[in-house]
Image (cartoon, rainbow, N blue to C red; front, side, top):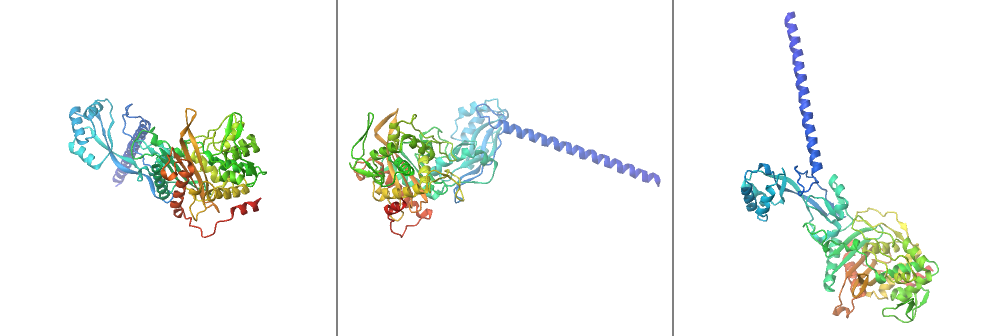
Length: 548
């Protein structure tokens, strides 16, 4: 009896010992496999950045990429599952035969190129990325040793060209190379949460369509348009034409990839008189009714300043803006002084870079030193060059009670604190003056009944090798609506528009950029929730008199 009990104890102890040994062995095997997996992942991550040219020997790791949507949740960019074909050359029995079969299955590939690839000593190489289901089946039917499929992703842009310069695009490895895709490349890779943009796809379509129509009507070589929500700085639409299809791997240096909205530096022409007028009002000693002598051309050194279709009379500040007088603008600048002008331009942000979430951003161009003649020409928009994004940002701030909001391509739920650049009084006066410029001045074709549009057009000669080209212009219009309480601003730029019978031979901004702005506003206003006003036109001049 005692012997049997002892045997049972011995048997139980031995069983426990064996179980313990087996458990330790299983844990060791698991840890070894886990360590191998970690090493393999490290290899993949390290070598994944090697391009095919330098010959990676490791299968790349496929990383998911989050969606990008417009402000209403409409998908702008997404990723779809695909398969890609790769080869392990050391597994291939007959290179010539394999190349023959691959070129038969994938007719867009050249047999000689495939032979050259498969003759490599590398252990891994791509044959074709993102195969269609039919192509995948064709390869499978050939039964080629050494050929393998890898589940991959392809970046897809459902709207093709529509938001090209906003979204930018990715390369074949789904790495952002431009636009939002480049700026938020890391975020899109590390999070499954979509990036929500400020743009509205419906508004974008309307703006793109109207800008394209104007480019065709006026035979321009290109153009740009921006719509901004004034209280938040949100960019509701950004269009640059010509554009490109980000679904296709085009030349990254092609002219279609140039974003005129953020990357160009264009002299604003008479649109800059908005800044000069705000300078006068902000000085505290000049009102909209202060009068300057604009009867004769103004001589500054060897230069002579003329008016285009001048009236040859004394003009008030209101009339200088309304009739776009270069002489009057120059005299305002001389009255205020070049140092005060430069200081004011610095204060309102014209001399610093204005950027959003796009890396393709142009710095403003202006003279150094800031001489007296520079001060005079800048007063009517020559000698300083800005991007359309820069223009719309600063003008929006001037009529936003004087508060500058940083422009953004990301959706903002509420208004953000901004920087004051002019007083509320100056802002209110500028709203009235910009509206009068449309109702009584030379921008009547910018008017849209019921929306109280205000704004200013500008024409500037293009430069080439430092010389102005007499027959090549940029024409622009900066406007906002409704001027009783500005909600949205619009900037339109046309590159080398031509005259038509409808414009009576003119190719200046009032005849092409201004009506383009009007057509855009008319089309998008109700989509933005702005309804036609039933109230009569305010007496803007009485409003200004009561303010001073």
